[in-house]
Length: 189
Image (cartoon, rainbow, N blue to C red; front, side):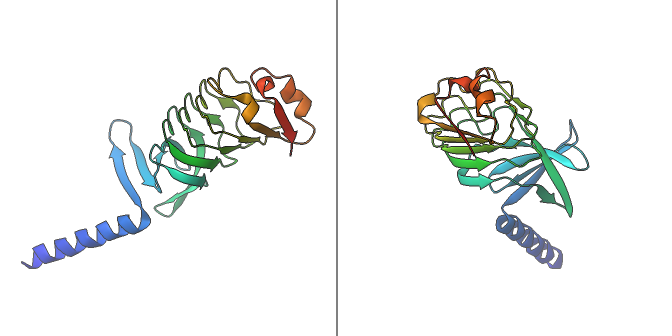
């Protein structure tokens, strides 16, 4: 009876801690990666100090992504994986951290409520169809003064309804860059 009582209390405390912190952990034995879900976003830890966003399908509202703190360690988010936020219909806005270097293929496809995204200057690649069918996307803030090479990142997209914010002095470069030159409203910020 004592053992059962102690185990029940331990499980109750564990459940309460997970519920309060809104995180869960699973270990993928085939690749030795730790996966964490925090605030609706799935992170996969890949090394001693980096991780990537592997899922965010059930995200609701606006997010400003920072580093991941887990088990007394801080992990830098270095990428958004393919399909990570695909069909996240209630995602409204997202700001990516300066540590992200790539946004995967179809990472935000069919995010019908997404209205704003901030892409840091650290990003060097954006996958095909990354923002395809993001029909409410009205503001994209790109922090890099050099346009990122993109191919079909904004497929099935209304360029005239979206303002592309770029760093001061880089408007001409974006107006002449393939993919970015389809935007009709480019402003320097």
